[in-house]
Image: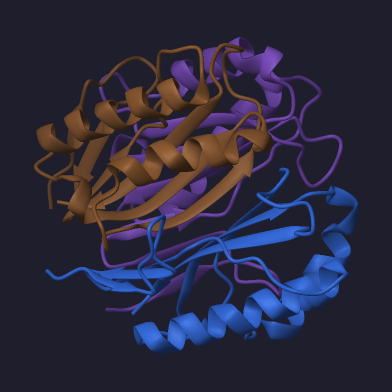
Length: 113
Length: 113
Length: 113
């Protein structure tokens, strides 16, 4: 079984496929609000999944980190606007500080290929 | 390979099976103490695993989030009372605030089906 | 498909293999600095991967928890010194308190076997 890496860099790859799965690096996004950042992240997720031969109907697991849990509703509105009906992954959302202070939300995805 | 979703909602599914794996959504539980919440979570894990065709002898990975790391021992007592001898998953436990203030512990599971 | 557990204890196993994957428990390390702890963790990762029949060219996913995000650069220097060129996993790094106060960094790994 072959491992394929997308955008491999010195520190990580943005996506890795293996054995019918794709793992995405934790995605952060541009924008000043959690709504904008979430929408930007989900556009990046769509693009990475497409390159890996997957799409958002094949999500298996999502981990969402928010820097401030009071933005949970704002993140969820953007998430639910994007998620296909009946196709949600297993998901966990927790509060953590992220790698750079401008980032308010980060999303990690495992999907089927 | 087929993806099967359990309790699919607007935001997530409670469990997703694919390619011999089951991913559970981060589970939270009822109760005032970490011991009570952990026991309630683990009952939910048992029930979801059973619906997915798995059980607690097939755990592969667990991520445990505590809102206060001083409750680590209390969580572990409930966890170890539940875990079959010699069948522990790879596990990581870290501190994070959770989605609602009454929740003191959340557990995410990946298991074999 | 068979589940194999390495160093199974009352609470967890240090590594679990199944269906072409290995899941490692969150690893912590000795040392006073983040650089020392990261290097010690990565030596443990190498040893566990070898026992499981894998190695650091087969990393699929890494989750890194830092207790203080200001040590991000220090962790990355140790990480990049260890990571084979072009072989990076999908990675997410977030800030969380860990199980014991001496630990400043914890790393969870999923790899191919």
